[in-house]
Length: 65
Image 1: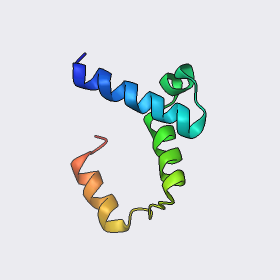
Image 2: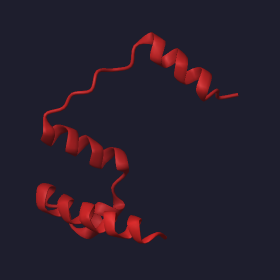
Image 3: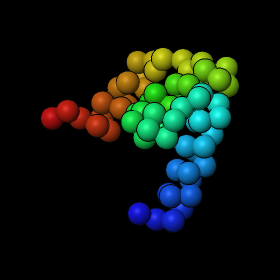
């Protein structure tokens, strides 16, 4: 594990504790999407759903086979 990852994870864990009241276990058991959803909500960001062109491009890039 790189020192950069460890340092970034420590900072992010601490921020999640301060901002969302998460314990270290809560942070490490959460998915990245759960954390991202809380950050977006705290920042007031609302993501628009992908349109048909974006979905078609993603299907080309990541075919299910």
